[in-house]
Each structure stands twice: as C-alpha cells, then as structure tokens.
Image 1 (spheres, rainbow, N blue to C red):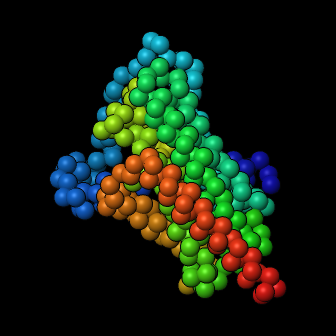
Image 2 (cartoon, helix red, strand yellow):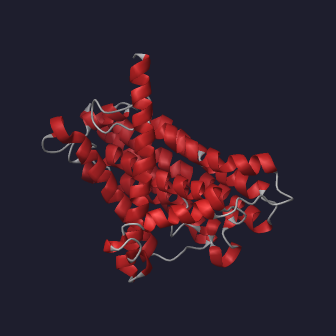
Image 3 (cartoon, rainbow, N blue to C red):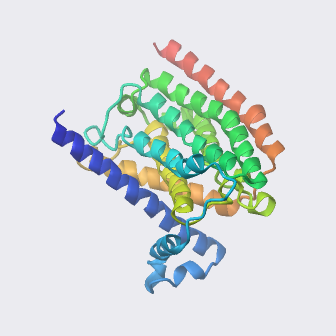
Length: 318
C-alpha cells in the first residue's frame, strides 16, 4: 500500500466518521419528534426542521468552555478525546464491501470489540477528574455497566466467529448464510442489548440519569467538549450498528452486491440505528439492580448457550 493510498483511506474514514454520526443524530431528532409529538425539532430552518443539527452545533460553539477549579485539568480536557478516538480507529476496519474497507484486519471482530471497550475510559476519566460527586457516581455506574455487558458482547461475537471459522469481518460475511438469521438470533439479541448498555443508551442510561445525578460524568462539561461526548455516543451507535449488520445480517450480501454491496451494509446499519433510537423512545430507564440482573441472569447464560449450540452445529456439520 502506497502512501497516497493510506492518505486516501484515512481521509475517507475521517469523512465517514464526521458524516454518519451526524446523520444518526439528525435521524434521532426526527424519529423522536414524530414518535413523541415534539414540535421543536421541526421548526429550525423551515422545511421539516432540516437545520436543527446546525442550530445545535452553533449553540455548542457559542457556549463558554468551563473547567472547574478543583478539577484535574489535564485529565478533564483529555477525556472527550479518549471517548471519541477509539470509535474513529474501530471504524477503519469495518468493511462496507469486499473492496471498500480502510484496513482489512485478520482479527477485525476482536479489534473492534476491544476498541469499543476502550471508549468507556473517557467517561471514567471525565467523572473522576470533575471533582463532582454526581460525576463520580456516574463514572462508577459506567464502570459497572462496562464490566457487566462486555462479556455478553464478546460471547455473541465469539459465536459468529466460531460459526464462520474466522475472526475476519470480511471472512464472516463471506461465510454468512440466510439461515444464520434464525440460528444466530439469540446471539444477535444479546449483542444488541449489550451494545445499548455499553453505549449508555436508554433504557440503560443510568450513568447520565439527569433526574438522579444531574448528568453523571458530563455534569461539568460545556461547549465543544460536551459536544464531543455527544458525538462519541452517535459514533458508537454507527459503529455498533454497522458491526451488527456485518456479523448478523450479512453485511453487503443482497441483490447486485457486486456493484452496490456497500449500500446494503449502510442500509442494514441504518435500520439498526433506527431501532436503537426507537428503544430510547419506547422504554423507561431501568434500575441499577435490574441492569445487573439482566446481564448476569439472562444475557450471559443465553450467550453461553448460543456459543455451545454453535460449537455443536459446527462439529456436527464438519
């Protein structure tokens, strides 16, 4: 790979990283507005509130960047970047088609899951460095969710990798078959629920519960630093949605896949992102004990059972 190719691929990933999360954010504004009858997001810019996201960006830019006096300044300032950058790196190994991928890593599934787990460190840094008890409590809740829901994600990905016989994301799509929609369905459900908890999305948004702990780890953040945390959330939705599409929905597999396969991957990922938005609207926030019970009593045993079933099928079929 030449230097020019590296530059082009890097720019392409960066462009996708900047555009896709904003598209998901705009979609969330509109979907929630329709589902809950919200009029506000429908006014900015005129037609269907097309400029709502632009208005939000202008609002964040205008706000003052405040650092608390008692905060650990370096950690406080670095936290948004630590939360955001792992998702940027992880997106570089997500294949949209057999040829449209920035870096085709042999162990791509493991690489993405590992980087997604690193992103939560930014939240922990934000809560610890803010010198605020509400922020610290939110960070501790984030740590509890990370420890609880990382295992179900790893097990569900392991089931798909075992079925395909490879950790390569491109290889998994190559081995995918339509009957995986049923065979790997329990693992897909486990992955989606655990991904919601990893991203701290409703109904698993206890670390940022505004009615209990103000806004958790982000209580002291303002302006662009706060916007970076929001961007990392939407980037996480994009990453998990595309990963779900590649692992469980066949990625670019579909009609005319040779020419428009990347469109299929994006459409499948976008459909999962809409489901994530719908879950935010449809489900109330869970309690912390319900969160832990769901993970350890239901998701982990179900994921282990899925791995065992996959192992039996692979051995018998082999």
